[in-house]
Length: 326
Image (tube, rainbow, N blue to C red):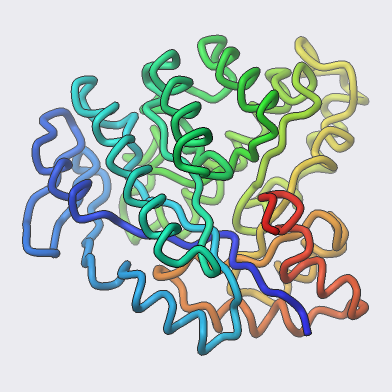
């Protein structure tokens, strides 16, 4: 029987939620007693109910769906969005909370780190602590760092260290810098998130970070957003028209072959296309729990037309290697 790993599953520490209410820049949080409203500068608001993120509920939902282990991370907003004096404190709160949950349930959870990436030296220091002292197994990487794109030169030392440590960078959407243009009709979470992570991944490729650090491991969520669907056009632009090649020497398609796609998409067509595009060796089961129920994704992943061996890799084998799960 396959060992199943949910590679995108979120928690939210109460102490971090309370810290958000102290923040005074454009990101604001209000509320208390487990219920909060997170306001991204007026462009997007999300309701946060801490009961949805409880480890007990997560374990019960995992058991119902036959998920053996989950890779947990603290959901957005990321610490880099906070005022500088709160960002480092916020990251430490997140990582200590994730590590504590993993310690209590070591057979069910492993965790990935949240970092104050608005301060790269501080982020590297917290990364070292998260790996060395807390045994976290990857990094939660937002699609931009409080407005700074991921191919900015300031992040080069961080990519160097992450690659040396062999830690996967797990991309995740945050509210786009261009959110005002799509704030109506719930288009930000509906489509903006998927497009923003695709731009982020494309920047990591075209900006050269992936080539400069061939050991760098990246997970692109939600079946790769829109990037797999557009990859033919990207390649035509770079390889035929020779555009966007200032920092790369190989085809973006070749670089993207190193990237893992998680299968968080409630769509049979999307999940099947991801398998055709990336192959079973680069796919990871994930649910985005508690935003999405585990079964909402599992029904499509379990129906993929592939061998038992490939299904075992998708459901957990690839994740066990990537996140060093014993």
